[in-house]
Structure formats: structure tokens, C-alpha cells
Image (cartoon, rainbow, N blue to C red; front, side, top):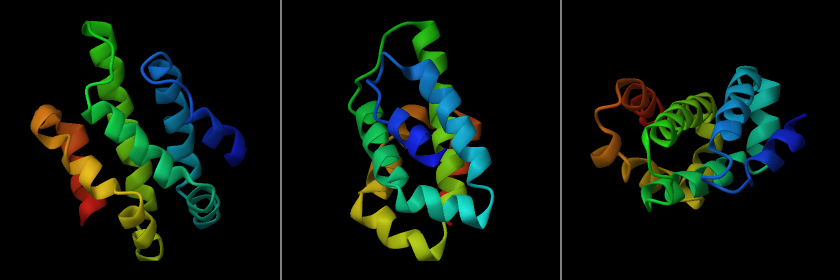
Length: 125
């Protein structure tokens, strides 16, 4: 299951934003267990999410209210996954993938999104 969901994270953003929301929601649920965290962390999920955060930060997203809503939902789901993976044993993966820089780079543009900011603070704790 992890490999299928991880493969979906490689989809084309922003064309697949809505599908990515559901994919990240499933990964969020599966990473609530130790076994799930280990499987997804070792499967490259942290690096893939970092890349998506970088794309969002670069402005590579569709324009319009619906696209903006999907992007906001995607950010919340992505950061919820990262919150589950924010464990000392995976810290090096966060650093190697530049995840912290990519996440913090979104604060200026998405700082008003309460759930995104709350979950981001939990990732950075």
C-alpha cells in the first residue's frame, strides 16, 4: 500500500491537486502507527513531500478559487503527514530533503491558514 501511495505523490502538480489531497489523507492515517511511519519514511515520502512544498512555494499552482481551496487542503494534509513523521529518527531525512526550508518558505503566503500553521508548528517542535 505504501509504495502505491508514494508513487501517487509523484503526480503532476497542480493537475492532480485534488487526488493528492486524498492521497496525503490516506498517508496521514497510515503514518499514525510506528510501522506505517517506518514504511513511508523509508519509501521516500519525506523527500517527495518536500518537493511538493517547493513547487507550491514557487507558485506552480493553478489560479482560481477552486484551485486555491485544493492547494490549501493539500497543504493541511501534507503537513499532517509530516507531523506524524516528525520523529527524531527521521530528522536527518527532513534536513537532507530541505523540508524545513521548503515548509518555512510557505509561511508568508499561507500564514493566515490556521490549520496549516498549527500543524507546521507541530512539525517544527
